[in-house]
Length: 387
Ligand SMILES: Cc1cc2nc3c(=O)[nH]c(=O)nc-3n(C[C@H](O)[C@H](O)[C@H](O)COP(=O)(O)OP(=O)(O)OC[C@H]3O[C@@H](n4cnc5c(N)ncnc54)[C@H](O)[C@@H]3O)c2cc1C
Image (cartoon, rainbow, N blue to C red; front, side, top):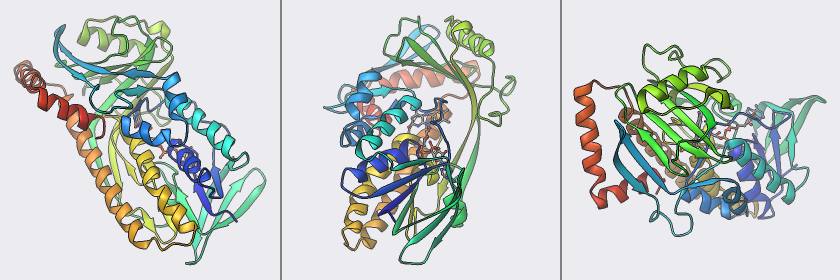
């Protein structure tokens, strides 16, 4: 019996484990995958999350591998409409760090193994949960058959299709959006260097972010006539690199080399916010509790900030302190943060939708005008970086 069982070794479960292990809490992590997930989803790590990650000693390694994005530019018709600097958003991390999620998870997993080799159990899938009020018993299937674990507390970080959430019958508020996107990573010869670039085109926004290894990620808002606009394929992969290349050329005037494509994926957007995060002795964090649109890049960061807020509460509980009141505050604050991130993503998506020429000119003029006011510009930079 461990002090705490964590379900899921995605970025959020791994970070949660590292935080608790270094406080001396005995943690076991159950992960259904026998090997890490190779598909790169999240790339943006925001300053508040970097500050939290620094507490587990992994921020340095992440920063050493990633690309610090210190500036974003918005362009339309080949002209720069607006610029945004992240220089003032944080003294310690005045940038958004770009690093593919697979590398982020690998560095977190390395830290968990340093703190407690053997704490992470791969190839073990949670199937049942029962909470008798004093402890939780978890049943899981693995190559060795059915396994049983017990712990006074379970933290479910098992992602958007959370089994723990379903087993506990926690309702979600779900919302689907009409937006779908095609994204891909390609060799970068744009000359944008470490800047992020947003192209405000009438056919829909094109976003472009630097990646380590002289690569660049392109994200294109698809329109109703686009071939992959029906949403993501069943495995989250899909789309066509030549189509993406064509969209980029038509909307930005830039050429990308389809032959250098190293990742391609299409995705639709929905929001799912759990009605509660705490049920008896089970606490849900990360995507299990709140799925927000990838546009705005806050989902993983939000989950890490859940973990950072929960860690001291769990450490106190393990040491026998009464935490019911602080857990309620935790739940209220984190659900509010998720709702805020979700609203921010809605604004980002609305700004990137296809527009007719007349409306496009009005919108782009408005963006240029607003961004030219220094106080508003720095306020938006702070909102954008989760401050
Ligand atoms: C295209 C795209 C781009 C994105 N970009 C960004 C970005 O730039 N910045 C950002 O912050 N976020 C971004 N996100 C969101 C981010 O990827 C997620 O928020 C993040 O992965 C959530 O982490 P998690 O650990 O909560 O869940 P997950 O990453 O889903 O991990 C859950 C883990 O639990 C395991 N698991 C599931 N069920 C069980 C079970 N029954 N038993 C045992 N293990 C189980 C899974 O195998 C998995 O390893 C993006 C998402 C997408 C789709």
